[in-house]
Image (cartoon, rainbow, N blue to C red; front, side, top):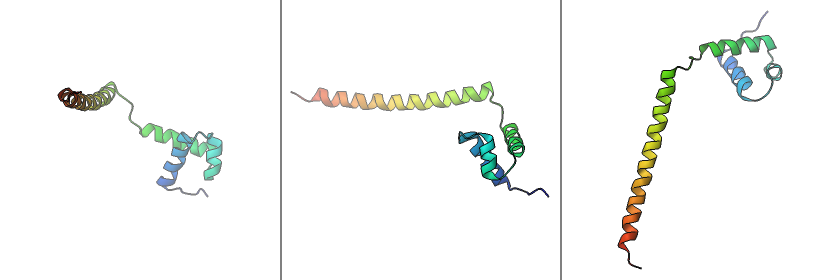
Length: 91
């Protein structure tokens, strides 16, 4: 009789298999499941992930550039204030 594993158990096993650096046989053994079962869970999980699209890549790039732009503006404002402060002082 096959044992039923919870969704959380399956997700944790897949996460460990993909991120731990251990080989799948070791992870399957550690979790007490068969190698083929773990491989099937990984395949199912990968199918759930949306395929990256050019649009999502562009959106991520825009977000990164906006963050970088905001940081550069803040740095520029600090440098302007420092320049005004030090220009006003006499040696």
